[in-house]
Every structure is written in C-alpha cells, then in structure tokens.
Image (cartoon, rainbow, N blue to C red; front, side, top):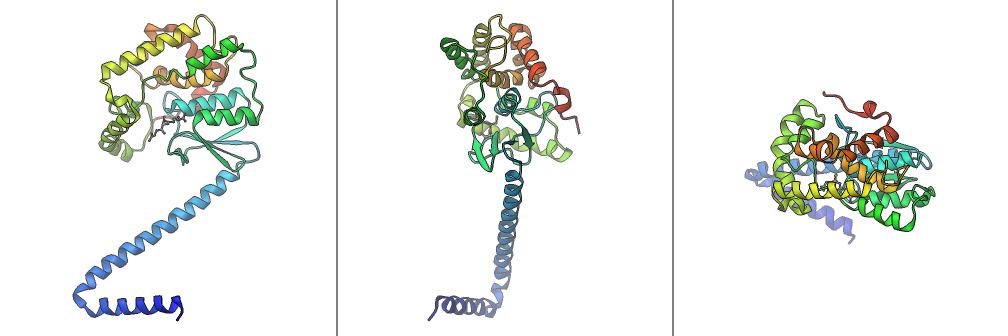
Amino acid sequence: MSLMFVLRYGMRKAAKMLWREGEHGWALTVVAGMCTIYVIRKVYQESRRRRLRKEWDGTGQDVVLLHQFRRGRFCPNLSPFALKVEAFLRLANIKYKIDEETPFGPKGKCPWITINKEDIADSEMVLDDLTERFSVQLDSQLEAREAAVVESARVCVIAWRYWLDGCKTFLKTQTFDRFLRFVFPLFLKRGTKNRSKEQGLGVHSPEEIYQICKKDCNTLAGILGDRPFFGGENPCRADCGVFGQLAQLMWNAPGTRYEALLTVDNPSLALYCFRMKDKVFPDWDDLLAHPI
Ligand SMILES: N[C@@H](CCC(=O)N[C@@H](CS)C(=O)NCC(=O)O)C(=O)O
C-alpha cells in the first residue's frame, strides 16, 4: 500500500467525520480559513523573497547594494553604522546603490550589504571585506602607533541612540506617513525600552547615559586634537565610524543636551562633523528626506 494511498484515505475519512458532525461545521470553517491564510502568507513571503533576491543579485558586478534605513530629515541616516558604511563607500570610490526596503539583514541588524550576490552583515565586517576586495588604501598614511590610536577612537561607541528618549527625537528627525506617525509612538516606546535593556545601555539612568556620552566626546576631542580628521590631513577608515556616531549627536538630536556636547562643549568635534560632511557628503542636502 503506497504512502499516498494511506494519506488520501486518511484525509477523506477525516473530512467525512467533520462534515457529518454538523455542529463542528463552524470549527472546520475556522480551521480551513486559518490554513488558507497561512498558505497565502507563505506563498506571498516566498514570492517576495525571490523577487528581492533577484533584485539584489542584479545590482551589477562589483557594485555594492547598501541596505539601510530610509533617509532622515537632518542626517542621511539614523543608523551610525549605515552612515559609516556609506562614508566608507564614498571615500574608497566604490560604486553603490541604496536599498531601503529591507534594512535588516541576515543578522537582524541594519546595515548590511550585497555584493556580487553575496550578503555581508555588520558594518565592521563589511569594511573588512570591501577593504580586501577593492584593495582600499585609506589607512596607508598612518604609522602603526597612530593607526592604533585612531582605532581606539573608532571603538569608542557614542552612548546615544535614537531610541533613548522614548523616540521623541526619532519622530522629530525622521519622516513617516500619517498612519505610522500615529502608530509608532504607541509601540516604539515599549519595544525600544526592552531592546535598550538587552543592548545594555537601557540599564542606565538618563543622567548616567549622558555622562558616559560626555566622557566619550571628551576622549574623541582629545584624540582628534587640532587635526582636521582622525586620519590626519585626510580621513581614514576610522573616520567613517567616528563620523557615523558623531553625526547622530550633531544632526539627529536637535535641541538636546547631546547636540550641545558638540556644539557647546566640544566645538572641535562640531567643526569636524561639518568638515566630514563637506568632504564626503557634498550632496548632503539632496540626500535628506523632506517632511511628508
Ligand atoms: N555591530 C553592528 C551594529 C548594527 C546595529 O546595532 N544596528 C542597529 C541600528 S543602528 C539595529 O539594527 N538595531 C535593531 C535591533 O537591534 O533590533 C554593525 O556594526 O553593523
């Protein structure tokens, strides 16, 4: 007796039983409805996955597809890591395109890239890969000790995130349609509170986070000194990471004491941000999203 026969026989028997017991008709309808929704959802997901894969893979040989959040109103990206990758692509003269439809990648984080049909997640791993793949020489002017000091600036991750203030600045600096503008505050506050605890920063009080951030800014200002860029006369790879972080304070925290950490307490860092903006993103204003 073949397996198919057993399955078909079992299914026919089960269907007969359910239909015979009329009072269970509604239950059958619900189950059948749920199964249909499940199948439609699966089919939709699969066809979307295939469509996207085709698009990503068709980006072009040696052209990077950078998957990131949509443009912000005052800064091209609210992800410091995405801004870092984009700055690197520009400094290294690597051709790239932007995808805003799928900002979260294989590791569940933004940004990530696709290059020559390969997906790479985590900004630092992206930069490692691209440096090797395209023989990028952004750090060639640095001596060993200088390179180590600059790297310490890069790992000095600024303790500010767009979700730290219950998403107030997030809503102010990003663009959404009316529906999302209404819905986001309802869900984001709670969601981001939990995420921030998992990430680590959320266990500190707002004052403690501010103090951590202040200390980091002072350290960065000390490392920069009176040089135009962390790499010296020209930006190096670490400048991309530092700029990605500082740009969030400079442009994505308007009117807050975090912005003042640069504009008032460490003007050398504010000037640095403008210098990087002019050098790497001369089209900054064109990239910005405008209120919907
Ligand atoms: N180490 C990662 C960090 C990326 C990251 O944390 N991205 C944030 C956006 S700024 C994110 O995707 N957060 C979403 C989440 O954690 O669920 C990198 O350098 O790319």
